Image (cartoon, rainbow, N blue to C red; front, side):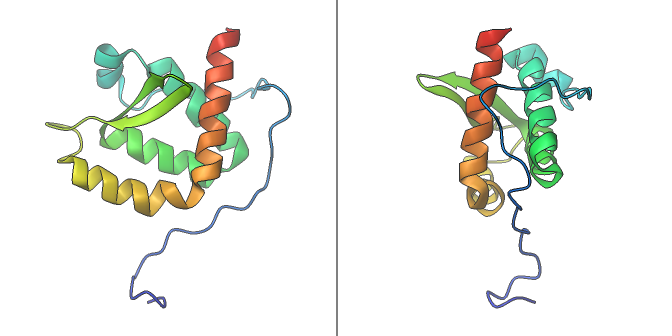
Length: 128
């Protein structure tokens, strides 16, 4: 048990790698773990690219994204880039509160990296 009384505390990400000016060819193939969501939101290629980019940067972060996608999370294009949004309902997040709790616990400690990856995803889509 740690000092906050929690049995599990998400590990910190090491700044192992950084991006250059552009997204590189990663040479590894990733696929969307929720093709059923791709049918509705048409974001499967974006998720595959996000998983590949995050795996290159830090495999732990890729695992977090994978888990969020499996729970029912989509990528939505906002005015300044991509944002992560929950799908609420059957075969997805049970509620907005459940998503917010897990987002705050697992993704927010890595907010700068998440934003960096979403920015790179936006660049990737613009260049394809």
